[in-house]
Length: 129
Image (cartoon, rainbow, N blue to C red; front, side, top):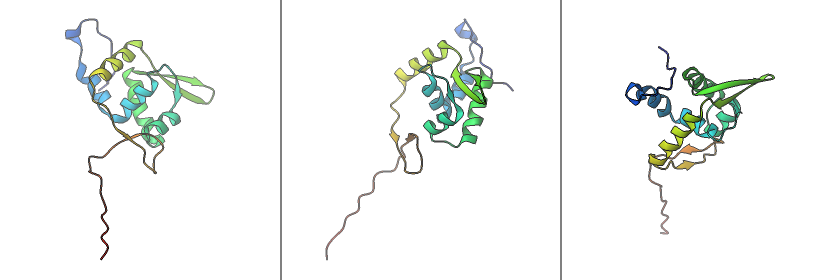
């Protein structure tokens, strides 16, 4: 089964579930948002910004390339990834208008922004006896 996305001029013919499945993963969404400014970046840089392992980044980038959302530009021994369509950037911007804010927390174990957990902060009370 291929997740290749083709742009359909007729909205009734669009299978938005395929697009939604690709965007539903936080790592892939982070990659697309990072690339939405028009830059082409290597996989390692995208992995660092998303706070994931390089192997995880490679797997997600392969899905985005297969879908046609992201194009690969070889440059010497490196491969740079960029969003393949201005229409995708416009769609991401439209989704950002209706999406809730994404809280970011930096962990000491990760270099990139991560989602916060739903746990309440712990307050330690010290009583002198």
